[in-house]
Length: 142
Image 1 (cartoon, helix red, strand yellow):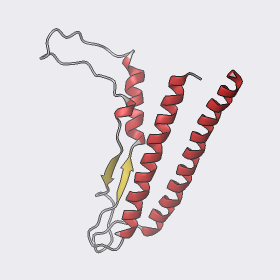
Image 2 (cartoon, helix red, strand yellow):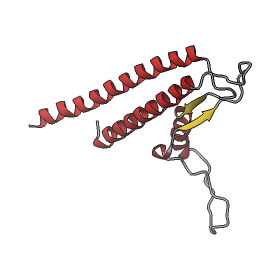
Image 3 (spheres, one colour):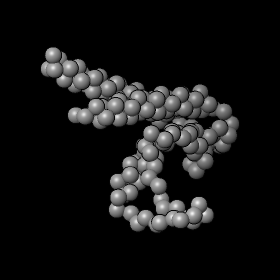
Image 4 (cartoon, helix red, strand yellow):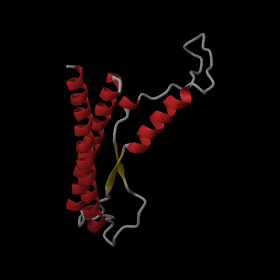
């Protein structure tokens, strides 16, 4: 395991923990507003954007590159750095709403809270595992 892989893993885990924290806040806000007329629930989109960034890096070496001799020329597609991907709050305008225009189902949001908590716990365990591996490697060096 290279040091760079370790830092990338820890960085990704930190970002994932931050995203789960944001998801928790957004979901709690949905529940708090479940009876407010015309309130629309929100979700957090991160993983699909992250996947797109990773795919752009993978596809980079196979893709067609145009040579540009001027700033006015069309640039080839530049791969997205996964570290630049930010979580996005997405408002759900599409689902059918209750009679008062609200589309929050408090029961399913409560289930989301449980899922978010479980994922957060799993991510912290993964992070502990990463550090435990480094600790083991450091002990074997001595």
